[in-house]
Length: 286
Ligand SMILES: [Ca+2]
Image 1: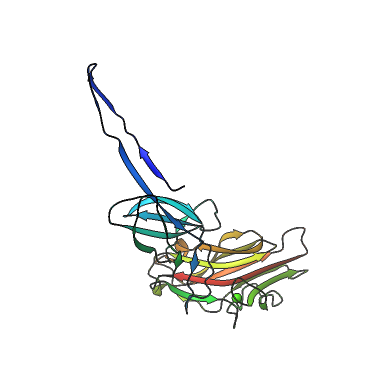
Image 2: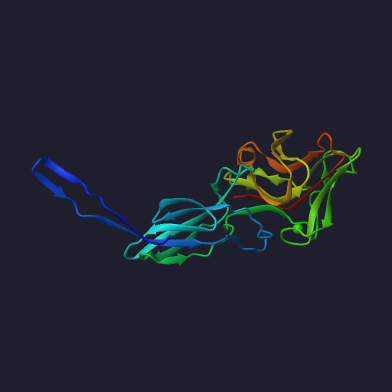
């Protein structure tokens, strides 16, 4: 609610019972910063503007105001002259909906605004990937399928490129398991060199929906060894969801010569068939 917050600091200073002083009321006025639903700008090389921005981290003159779910109406102290507002996109890493981090690959939105008492200002929330963000790959399945490296050795279980209404586009990757073909383990064909990674944040983004669990992990080349390890179990979702998997600790290690990401799934006990769709898979680092 827009309004004026008047804070009366009535400090009665009594040095003696007969000598008391009132301090004048201190008045703080506020304006309201309104921000709507976020969007992500699409650009060549960064794929579809699919995102899972869940909240914003808001700073005024470099002091944090808080983390706000969207859309938000945020009270900001009014003052003479412009206030510098910084708005950073918050995401839940690793499917942990109760946490929010500032996503390292989006530019913050910086704007100078005159915050007037009892007035609203509206800032559009259009994020971009940082220019320094490096995309090892963007797998959107629209033209091709790079997830063709069949780790499990069963040619009957693969990621198929299929036509389906996905969050952006008309094709997605499909994992369909049934009968004896009850398990899949699959990765992309190319491997990426640790030497090209500045050893900062690394995230795998993807959209998914489906009716069974799947695992996501890494295949790391360390010395003469290939080390495969799974990081996360992703649980089913009937609706498309955007997932941010933090692979910084795995991939940004000095001994990682090259790396891949790997998906696997096995039909859960009691089920005879499972269906999982993947799309807009992006492996991003600096
Ligand atoms: Ca697609």
